[in-house]
Length: 404
Image 1: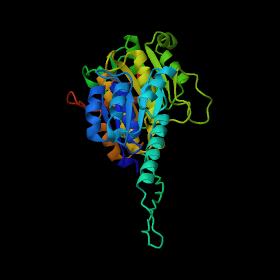
Image 2: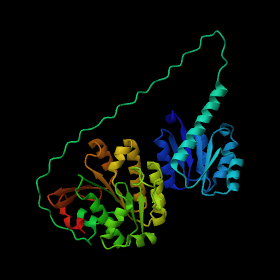
Image 3: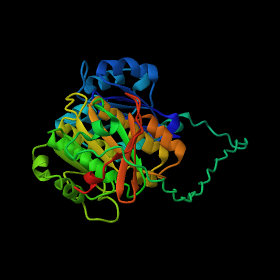
Image 4: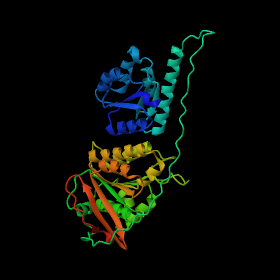
């Protein structure tokens, strides 16, 4: 089983290392990481992994040298090694093979390709070990019977969703101005850079409009902004943002705004023409890579720390398409990467998208939680919790923002 196999990754870019760790971890592998070649060479013999992944360009010692030295160790003469690099020439690949690499991946690459190569190399190694260790069979001697455990597929459980009873109308405390800092208004003060905010409410409560206002205000303040489109076509998002007197295409051309298209993959739509778009079936590992690539264009990395804003609308669809642990790992990665890059991120979700326990687990990794609801023709929001101060649970009328 994959869970019994250990993989060691040496990659100096922490974001990519976490992506590989998430992608392979969800497959059941035990994944360890090092961020430079020397540390990798010191730790790999101690950890004795079943497969090694080496980035070529690393500080202190490059991947070629790590690979060469590993091959000099008897215990690692046959251990599968995959080289990762942005160098794409044949000479670079030949150099990797000459020092003992089994396979070579040129960046950027789909994570499903990495997973396929890892699985293939480990299976090939297992076949070799089995062939070498296969005992000689004596004719006439009874052999032990091997019983294969049959894993029964669990039935899909469909939850019955009960409509929530509308709350009694409450008078909003005040109305925020469209040019006022949205989070400062709702949370009663300045929030720390890199905060992760969970926006939750029923369908039609104004969550998406609130998130677009948040991004529009950031663009007007000349902050770097990203919108990850899960539930809406990017063209519709551009149209909504343009209602705030913004030329979104111009901001995109200036690398101030990026739209990541994770919407067009569904519904049998034509291939997306967006610069940052999922090709083929949506995979959360590939989506994470795409977001990192868009972040690099904006300077939203833990090295450049340009900061800014991000919106993921809506993570509810992820619960419908992926196993819960996979979604939780993806959200944890997004929260960490935003925090280290000083990017404030809104995560939009519908009430009832997952069970209360799972929702609480996700809330735990957030810095602030914002409730939003509709009462008649009014749209109200209030902070449920925040880590940097005591939340004031007053409702704020945000109706006029939705109509902009």
